[in-house]
Image (tube, rainbow, N blue to C red; front, top):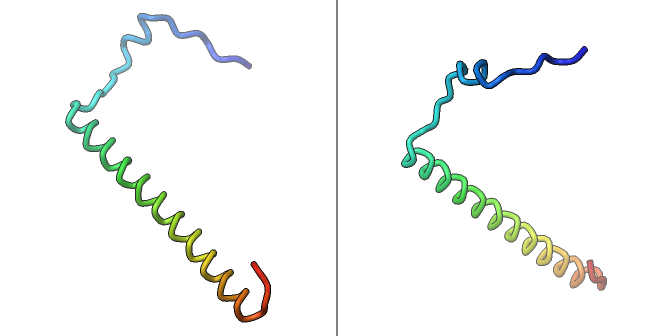
Amino acid sequence: VGMANINDKELQTIPLYIPPIDSQSQYADRLTALNRQQSLARASARCGEEVFGGILGEMFGHKF
């Protein structure tokens, strides 16, 4: 069973909230900061894995 089509008059009756541009900017800034933190955390984890692998290599004579 399909969905009925919505015409433009019906669509215009649906209220649409658009936040002020300063709120949108704040949200974008927060997302950018979170993405940056996520990237730094991933880089830190990779470095930790490399250090751990190096330590294991030193201890057991293998490169991990």
